[in-house]
Length: 257
Image (cartoon, rainbow, N blue to C red; front, side, top):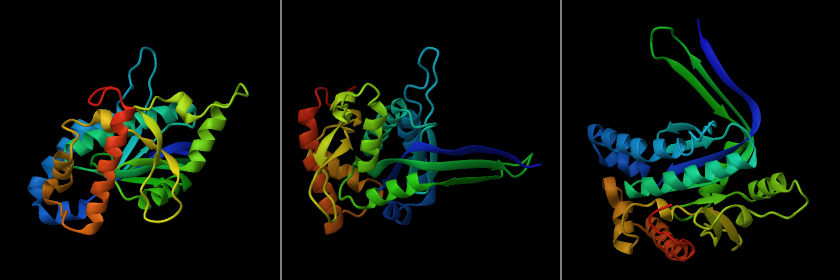
């Protein structure tokens, strides 16, 4: 008999993160060498990020995670503002940790309708069917693809939504009031096209392990035999380095929490 677990249709916060240069990694490495690299990635970065703050005294704060090829999906249980802040902290940890291991990520955090189902197809064998669908994923995916760097943006409707959820006392509460700059701040995100404007971004700098200089970051982009000798990648590297310099000034502790 099939056993199915379904998380009902709800408004939730979602992060969509994509590994830059993933195709090169798969094509240029033997499968036997690539798998251990990914095991390190998930053990040290993704798992650490999704378990962040999970065991506070008397409380449990889960972040759901699904990894499909070079894409990472993270989503919350509900749309309370505290869940948004937890997701930002998790994304911050994951992007910084993954960059340290040579997996630069680009992503977006959004909110909206989301449904997830997990069905066991066989009682004695590890056969499963999983479904993740909703507008929240589409919104995050669309903003992710617009960017030209390694980093994560918060969609504008989500910023407005979180601020309105916080506005219970009639006061104007912005994200800048709620989260310190070592987690999130406004930045002119390098986009492929469109209007130049300040957008809220995740500050992953404190979670990077290593020296935040040009040589080190370039080496991380090139790790695992990724091709960095083209202008598309070069633009992303330069834009990422520019962000790092700004983020350093907004982060009191560069390599710590």
